Image (tube, rainbow, N blue to C red; front, side, top):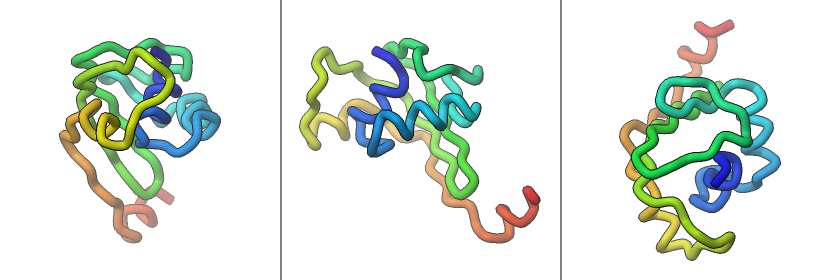
Length: 95
């Protein structure tokens, strides 16, 4: 399954088009490497999403077979390793 589709099905990102944009901007990494939206994911991969206001790192527990996932099942697809909201001072330091 593609990373952009997985991010949408796991409810990390609301829309697949938004996930694709983040991948194209180099914000999404799998196992430390910047990836394109078409990169396939597998169980055990560690995904990092580093946006301006949030840093999220998680491990993929399962990749769904279908294109529909229940809300309960979506929570079981990943294990969050780190979830950090960036403060305004962190954002200003980037500028």
